[in-house]
Image (cartoon, rainbow, N blue to C red; front, top):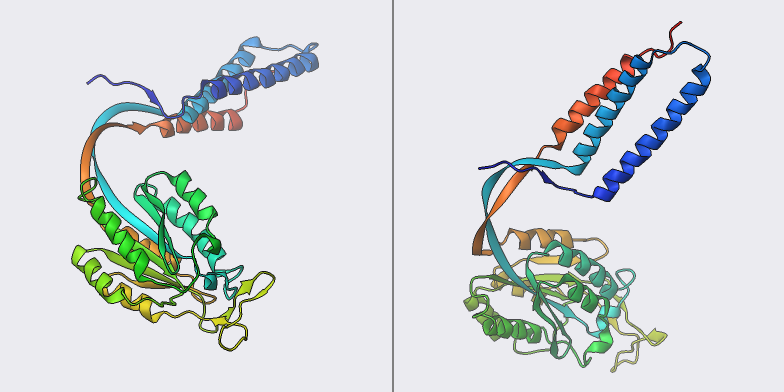
Length: 326
């Protein structure tokens, strides 16, 4: 097979610009040298030797910068797939400030990192409170997901309580509808909530998730001490006592859902910052191999040119060439 030189960073404009800068600076050096030494005897051959030496290692540095790759080899790349639905609780309690600046704002920050981590997988976004809504279907488009995350707020959904079963059932239904499109992908749900649940349909939904082999990784958001809920410059009042309502993290349901679907429970609070652990565990799930492709790969040989250039520069430094004859 014929070997072809491939450049990893073929920016001709940058390389040409650096050549021009080198020539300009070196000509300034030669001009100053000439003015200082015009009345002295100068051996031009030695000066030319110096110019060739420096020009040579500058050329080697530029070649190394361009990233030369010589030779080729065939490499098989397996393409794996995961489908991940992120279900985010947007009930009013997510505005609580027991996690600064608020539960929801902290979740939005963490979600942006999560989306970037799973750039090779399809991600979808479901929002819920008393009802669930599909905010973004499964997609590879990172920009669309980031826009939806930026726009998350508690006014997007009705706030008449929280039904955790609703987003799980919706994710399950979407996975089933998408089975013909992506039958071999690993399917996962990341459930983010403070744990309050007023629904009654959780047990049957969990059974269906378990039968479908869909794991739920739950993230509990909040603290055991809890806090009041900001609302229109004041705080939300409890309807029965007319006192400020206090919302706390209720982790029992979230732990139960994770345990019964072979997922795991994690926490985001004032003392536990476990979103990175959740990401690691989801990454460990082996995505089903949905295909493979063979690509021609070549190795970047920049190091050899860089090493040669450094050797010549070192020689230039420790063995200066006399350009003035005394």
